[in-house]
Image (cartoon, rainbow, N blue to C red; front, side, top):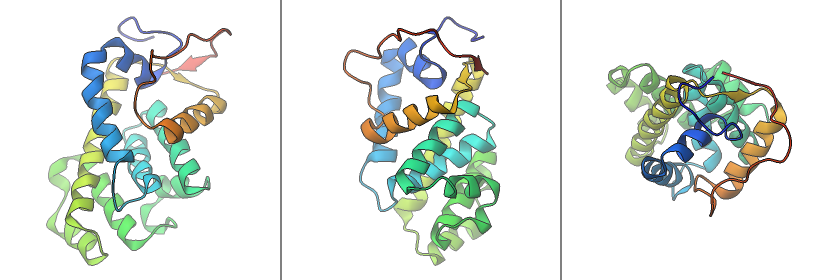
Length: 193
């Protein structure tokens, strides 16, 4: 049960963002820029960073949502799973392996990102902007994960929910729909934290 009253039909981060539209607006805008804006990293690669960080933070809602978004954008359901299991054996480029390692280090503690980790990324072809954006995406998802878990939001247990959410994320991005979210007409599904 959430620590504050949140709309039951809007689990996870969505209910929190609706709770305070004034604080949600800049967070949504930053997320839209980083994950859907102009970048030499694909949208799928950026979603992999979000999924990895959320998995390592054990934030079920965010992990499931961004894994599904990565799956849809990459056109398979194995890459994100493999990245979360072992970055070094995952079917991604050497550059992505190096960037994902930087994201994992950022998730642990920003000071854990070493010159060696950055040098590895550069040697694999990563640009300074890609390194910057990787750290910022990882830091942003640490914020999201702590926000979701710190207020004890609920996470649906039905995989169909995350399919719908992944489609919404990949189709619309991170902007709030005009007028907000509709209230469902059916009974809510079982949810867990």
